[in-house]
Amino acid sequence: MSHEILLTQLLYGGAGILFFLLGVWSFISHEPLWRKLIALNIMGAGVFHVLVAVAYRGLDAPPDPVPHALVLTGIVVAVSATALALAFGRRLDREAPEHTSDAHGGVDDREDGTHA
Amino acid sequence: MNPLLLGFDILLSTTLLGLALAALTSREPRRGVILFIAFGLLLALVWARLRAPDLALAEAAIGAGLAGALMLSAARRAARRR
Amino acid sequence: MSSSNPQALLIPLLLAAIGALLFWAFWSGLTGHEGERLAALALERVPESGASNPVTSVLLNFRAYDTLLELAVLLAALLGIWSLGPAAAPYQRASLLLDSLVGWVVPMLIIAGGYLLWIGGQAPGGAFQAGALLGAAGVTLALSGRPNAGLPGEAWLRVLAALGTLVFALIGLTLMGVGLGFLTYPPALAKALILTIETGATLSIGATLAAAFLGGRPRAKRNAEP
Image 1 (cartoon, each protein chain N blue to C red):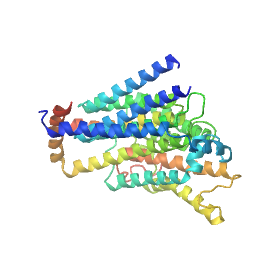
Image 2 (cartoon, helix red, strand yellow):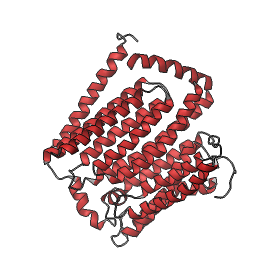
Image 3 (spheres, rainbow over the protein chains, first blue to last red):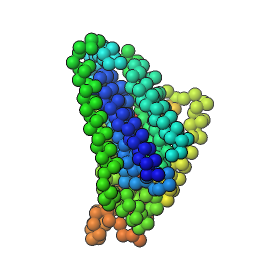
Image 4 (tube, one colour):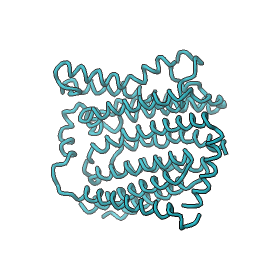
């Protein structure tokens, strides 16, 4: 019984850690803003996975509500942070459009060749 | 151990992992963002499976809906710039 | 391209190290000694919190500080977005089919939001889910070409965006003035206070998310009143 719970926690928590690592990798190795934002959101999803896995107590026991409350606020903060980052990106494009468009294309291709 | 449940867990986790990998390695903005939206929808399923229905509701509305719409507009700008 | 690039070696090593550390921490957190856990304490006190949904009682009673600051973070994000410039040009008006669909979907999203807000005390739901639905209604309006996402003019929008933080902080300070301590609800009033705060928070979250989607300060008077 308790092994079953531990197995589920390990499965989803382990997947969460994997998501976090994948997100970190993509965040540091891909240049364009939209790729960084997807990476950031997937890192967040990984953190939420770990928290919800820790809160899990089996199918017929109530889960721990405290991590759930943390994740709920976290989801909303993550989306507002994404919106803020996009606003920054648009402002940067407006300030130096020619610089960003060149840098994005070039670095993107090179980095993909290195790591993909 | 309920083998059906374990099978579901493994299937869900590997699908999510595949979607995350595909979204992170996609070089085409629109494709990457749509994969990310699919990832967000399945994430809501994970929360429901782990007995967190509050999170499943929020994730379905925000992770798939709002974040998806935000990222799609970003993808549109990125695609236009190429 | 070349695998002799030091970066290509460094990043996987770094990730493996972080991953091992995280997994070790996760494992020891799961299998650590069985002391008194927060979960048991929180679940035991839920009946006296004014909301029978454990997540709502944690959000708005036991960890109300956290939620207040989280609403402040949302407000700060919106202020940041507004200070970066005007909103993007509105989308073009949707075709008749989508337009009439939006006319059905948006009222339903608002009703569903109100339902989630009310049911949040006893069942899954609450201010964040309801606010997300209201935000989604705003995004739908924006995508179908309504200027300003159906939000009121800037003066009212400011009030709306600050409402959640304001109501929350005012109730907290009033309770402190009465001598109960910041955000320590008297049990008889807890349900009413939580619902008041949640209503303000729902409106704020919805308005903030919709305004954040517009990506900048609302454009000058295209529509002055909703």
